[in-house]
Image (tube, rainbow, N blue to C red; front, side, top):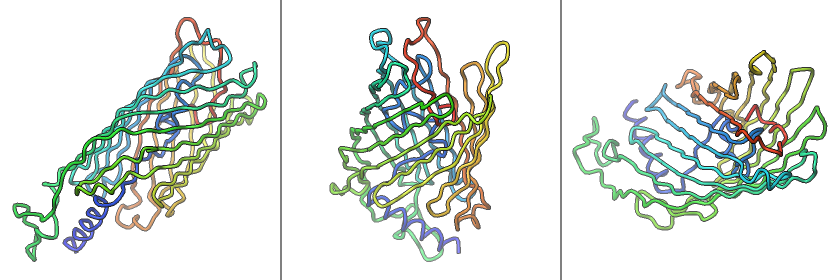
Amino acid sequence: MKILLRLLFISGLLITLNLSAQDIHFSMFYASPLNLNPALTGVNDCSYRAAGIYRNQWRSISAPFNTYSASFDMKLLQTKLPNDIFGVGAMFVGDKSGDGKLSMNSAMVSVAYNKGLDKAHRHFLGLGIQLGYTQKSLKWQQLAFPAQFSGADFDLSQSNGENFTNPKGFFDLQVGLLHQSTFNDVVGMMTGLTVYHLAQPRESFLGDKSVKLPMRFTVHEGLRIKAMKNFYITPNFIFQYQNKAKEINFGTGFEYHLQTAKTEVVPSIGGWYRLTGNDAAIINVGIQAFNTRLMFAYDINTSSLKNATGNRGGFELAIIYTGCFKNKSLNTPILVPCPMM
């Protein structure tokens, strides 16, 4: 049975290597703003923001899939653009998965301009552009292939019969649109659209120049509702589509804002569900104090794979720090209605 499962895995791997790949994803998509939408560059309630997130998945059934990202973005020209937001940022993304250590590393820079549509800073319309360089690699020597099967086991000292070559690095381009509105002191809304891989760069581990990275389309929507004094509800969802693969993730967070003598403390809890394929239920807890937000999420696998995983999917850790320069921004955007992004 183990040999059969291994052969099935190998077949799937070969198909993946020869066809277009799918992108990484985070359950706490709102905790990595520059990954979510380049138009969010510079959109925070102070001057600058540093964010980091780490995801570990499938440890219970295989070599774990590790995904991580770090970013920094800030506002510029704050005094010259009192009604608008002009931001720049940089981001690094890394991903390593499976026995073959399939790796991806990307470095990106982004710029965004969010135009204030009113002097009260309640409505903004923004455009963001992100440009970067990506490198992928695979340690295929650590993998077993059908040509190496002896009838009883795999002999990795034998030729695998494949013509592997690590693809050259490529430049990549993303574009995002963002609309934010605060209708009153109770309700705020954010809507975004991002198109990734506009240049559709070529990538193949088998030397096939016709293989291109397909564009990915992401739509995200969020609300921020003040249900009562100090208590907020933040429902949101994300829809992603790439090369016929779809992901729908929706849920809500609950926050309580407690003002102390030194800082505001905001504990939170939330629940989401990844609908496509009945994949996973997601629980999230977080705490914010002294401009720092710590978050933890866990995926409870609910798909047909749960018999193998024992419902164990993956976990994520995230941290976001938002800081202010001494000459604090003259323009303050609305509170982004994802959970304390």
